[in-house]
Length: 122
Image (cartoon, rainbow, N blue to C red; front, side):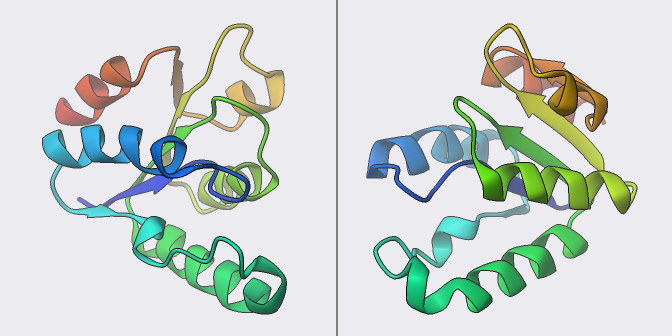
């Protein structure tokens, strides 16, 4: 089972991009981390590569864990794509969770640890 680590990158600092992903990767094996290709600062020039590769990662995964601490266009589109493909989509977001996020998720949590436990029990 492969898990894609979906969450904001554009406009985020290293801690915002990596801290939660490091926590998930320490507990969930076989993850697909889009931060392995850090395009920050080059988004304008590399937009096609960013989107194509991220979409390829979503297609290749079985589960998406979407950390949504703030609105993110790319994160939302990855969630929708995963949902349309029938993937398990686990959203982590502060209350109140957007109706759009809730609708396009298998389940939603407010803390990352609960999402990890859910994946561990799949």
